[in-house]
Image 1 (cartoon, rainbow, N blue to C red):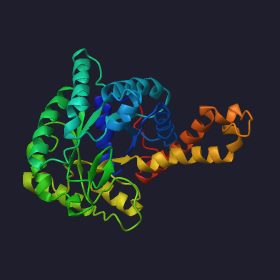
Image 2: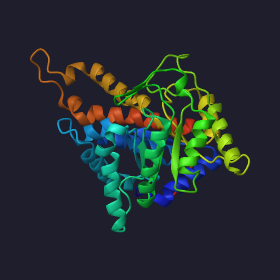
Image 3: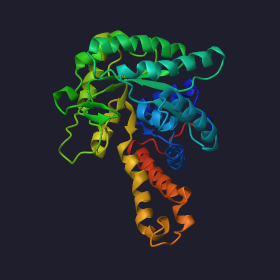
Image 4: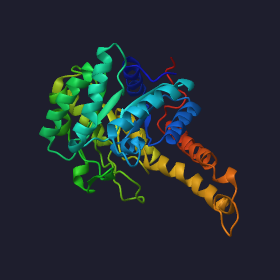
Length: 344
């Protein structure tokens, strides 16, 4: 299927919230990892989200070029072409963008989409994330208001982060402490600034102990009920329908989370869960296995010539893609999106 239209993307997110499932949002940084993500979603019969971070976008432009916009445009063009061959709906998203990279990443990409929409075309990406976790909440929401206005006009869904995700991702690092938990007051301030869907479609990454990276059991203390309290606070503040979920929530830093924690978060309104660390390992581990198993073939040792079919990048690349695709299927099953594609 083609990359989704803005209308289809909104339908995907609404269906997920209403029916209590979520989409894995898979970070990619190459054509191989993109193809692996597509294959995994197709095998699972799940629609999904594929995203690039600032570092992933730089890498896609060429390691010696490091142009986030060029890499993002190239990624989107390639994804639009190859995604046509898979029977599921795919949305394209840009991941964490801190303040110092807005002018070199999200704002230029928004300008491209604005021009495309003005010509009657679809936006380049279906959603962009503004990561204001490193600035005061008031500044975070002021920037979010500006971006939401532009995103609405460009038919793009904005994702924001309210609170702090611990650990490190692409140079953005936070300590693991009590700042990792968003408050009901944070949620109310967000709704006052951006509305609750009435002023434009956006997703909110409220934090409930989330940490980027991989940690041993016990190091990360998730409190999914933080999300429940946030939704309830906004419902009460604005007199919304009791039991409704005004926010489309996003789960960051989910590696190593238990099935119970994931299910609780999804039940409270999570529609998108970022998956990066786990899929990186799932891609790399089979490649390492290939290299160890075919040591004599991938290396020209003792004056020999090696084995071309074993050091051909397609050989070990296929192994990596298969491993990552399997992890995407697992993510779809964990989030209950498997078998629930909305179709054309």
